[in-house]
Image 1 (cartoon, one colour):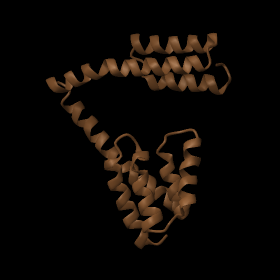
Image 2 (cartoon, one colour; image 1 turned 120 degrees about the vertical axis):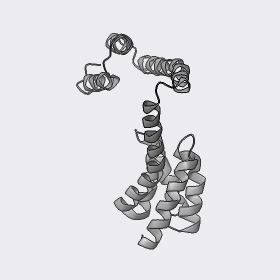
Image 3 (cartoon, helix red, strand yellow; image 1 turned 180 degrees about the vertical axis):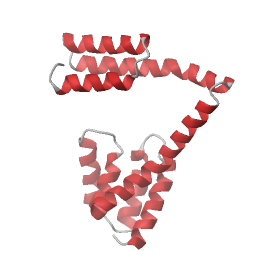
Image 4 (cartoon, helix red, strand yellow; image 1 turned 30 degrees about the vertical axis):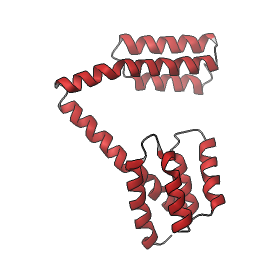
Length: 174
């Protein structure tokens, strides 16, 4: 891929990021139009195979964008497409979080947090239920219940709980 191709591709992925409400997969048809039809960086088969490989792999769904870029131009292409799709939405999320933190005493911010708390708790409970149902052993159920109780009743950052759960899983304890 030449620099003359890289800059428009990066710019296009920056724009696609702003349209990807629901995840990057919703703008895959536009990626196909650009990378296969317009720029001829990939064939139809490479495009569909890239999405299939990425979707079959563990991890976030957005990784298919890096696979598309890799197929088009190796590691630089992967970095280019992934940065393009991730930068705008990430910057907006960071800016919104900082703004909300600065204005946390505003009634609208407090109301928003109070309104989304039950939704977040319900989604987390549903995730815990699904993950526990996958492996309904006593250690898994106990770990899930302990993590839920600690998250609810203490000020322990949930990232520590996730890390401990990951370590216990890695060593085969659960």
